[in-house]
Amino acid sequence: MVKLETWVSIASLGLIVMFVLLMYSFVSFLIGSKAQGPDIVVQPEGVLIQVVSISAAPGIILAGITYGLVKNYGSKNIGVILCVSGIVLLIGTILIQRMIPKIPQILSVPAMVPLTYIFLAAGIGIIITGIIVFMRQGTIKPHIGDENY
Image (tube, rainbow, N blue to C red; front, side, top):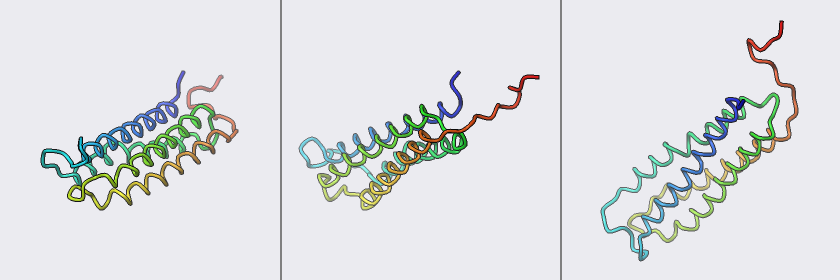
């Protein structure tokens, strides 16, 4: 039976993948088909706040919650999932950073560059957390009601 910790780590991975895909499509939209921006009026600040608050922040928080759930006994499966989450966030953020200079000046969001550095640091932190969880060996305490009388 799959435990809560595994599901939380899978949810974290899913949210981080969703963030990378949303940011990639958002930046591609801002660049436009001929690198001149979109043909319609947009407010990139609002979309950036939505993308971060809907997917990135919850994904990073769930990675931390996963660590809190398994910090005493560790888990190889959960450690691998956390490492994959961190790698996806790291690689996706690097790809997004390379696309940012192509955004037209009028649509440029000043907070986007510092935000990418924050997500690079978060990706590295999630990878380190995954390695710690993977390497930790401990005993699993039985849950309440699992004792044999």
